[in-house]
Amino acid sequence: MLKGILSALGIYKLYEKWLWQQVKNEVPPEHVAIILDGNRRWASEKELNPWSGHEKGAETVEKLLDWCLKLNVNFLTLYTFSTENFTRNSTEIEEIMRIAQDRFFKLLNDERIHKNQIHVKVIGRTNMLPEGLQKRIEDVEKATAGYQKHFLNFAFAYGGRAEIVDAVRVIAEKVKSREIEPHDIHETTIEKYLYTSHMTKQEPDLIIRTSGEERLSGFLLWQSAYSELVSLDVYWPDFRLIDLLRALRTFQKRKRRYGA
Image 1 (tube, one colour):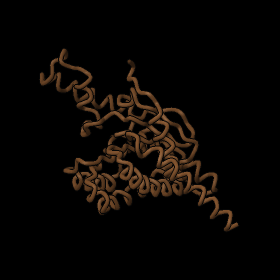
Image 2 (image 1 turned 30 degrees about the vertical axis):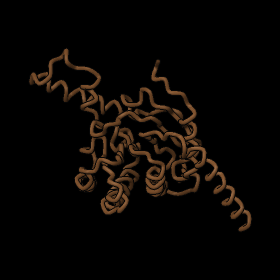
Image 3 (image 1 turned 90 degrees about the vertical axis):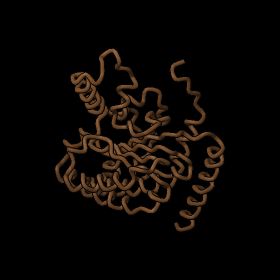
Image 4 (image 1 turned 90 degrees about the horizontal axis):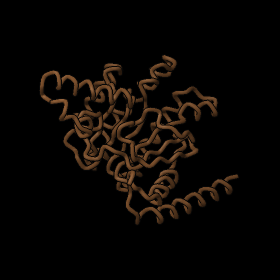
């Protein structure tokens, strides 16, 4: 059995190396967004409670950060918890919030964040989150606010429609106060008030969704108009470097025309 495991690991490493050689010399996507799907199904198949999947998924995020730094991906946006997810079982929600609070505290003291000047931001209706978690988020955002080399965004308490509604509300208030004239409202005006407005590259080049599903589920509805979509048949906790490399290789082979 051990021999079989070692053999499988050897094949995995060879495949990973082969994929790396294919990807490394091509232009990487500047902004990668990922829908982290399948945590609960991963746990269910192992007869574990749902938050075990979320815990394992959080560990995968830590690995992902290293991979993206190595691949020169400058903008990374992760869909972690939607506004609709608040309808889940209260115990599961409490556990997710606990895991998130622990992970944001860990990020605050993560050497990789400060060494690589990673600007960490939570995009969404953070006022819906528990006060303790809001405080952790505020601490991380303040500590990394001056970094502009890399961007790591967590879409938490996020909804794509909610994002557009919130942007429109701000613009409506500015029209009401005569700061903006209606005829001066353009696409760039709306983009200025989206949750992602802190980034120079708001639109993802590549959106990856795990678990085999093929829908956006409200993720970055405005920003994703010309994003390349890749669906991977793997639950998020089992996501590996080879899965990321496969998605990048698919992206690099596509011809992007932006509607032209």
